[in-house]
Length: 443
Image (cartoon, rainbow, N blue to C red; front, side):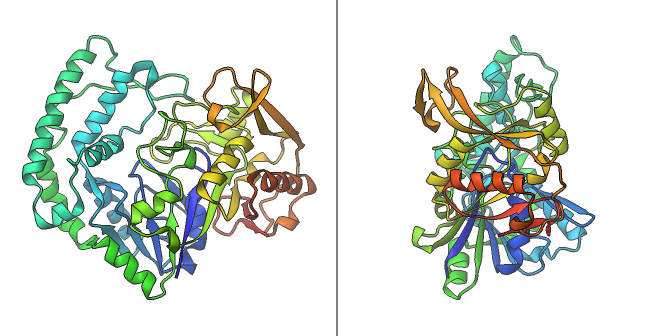
């Protein structure tokens, strides 16, 4: 049995969670392969609106197991809080499993994350400040602590060395920064201003040893041998749906570096993050909004800085699931989308939030980039001299929230979807026309 993959093909927040939720009933396991609790997925079913940070998005379907893979980094406190929240909603949390290869995010990682951002000043990346980047740095430097370490108790000496190094570095960094940076925190607004960070240095916020003692009994029952678990499932014919976090254009290697996340978010990252081979991948579905958004700093060629951008933000409820920060909004970027389709090897696509565009007189799509009059590809995305080619499409007044087939869309909306399909180079299997699980217009 082959595994199917769902990834975002923009800068995150494409609606992967609601699509995975809609599909999860067809699968035995939903697996998350990378990232940490900096990635929020929102699911709406009737009166329920659920914001998930680390547990895969199949929680509201009663059947599948929910697997957090070895490529992730997980906060003990964050995981326990999310599990307790789900238990309070009568979710069978015994279905939630963590690979023993996943790495632990400690409070000192979050402290270092915020100090790193403060040190960057105007060049701040706009991280969530939850310690994800520093945790991946420790992993790469071979200083990380895995859930297997927690299980066998072989982590204390390494942890104490890590604490000493982090606290020493943080104290030195904070002392240098206090002379040049404001102390009061301020939220980023539309990517225009870098965040300011309160400079706090004390025993890494809480004592990690104390935190482990507190949370370990509630975490260890969920820890499994991740490789044995997944391969055993595939070999016995179980159906696996792999859920990506964030978006392809935030990939550490192929995104808008350095304004990227700390993990691989493209479909190839699923193999690394779960320990499965490329021959075990079946379909790869790319999720994209009918327009584009981005949180934090970094290049965003199609961004709208006017009233129309604000309209998309308000109507699309474009505020971060984890941070609440307003998202930057712009037209669909077909150059970036085609690039993402290639690096993921998409077999199909899904377009979300088409209903947000209803009522506009016209809708734009970025169809080309030019530098000094010459056509260029996505590689030039950060060049300040970049000029855009925009194609305009007729808007539609009709509400489309009741459509359940793409053929039922108004002619102008159908023509827009048809063009996106051509731009992506793969079939669009579904279009979301509202936030509810059943508000999908299918081919």
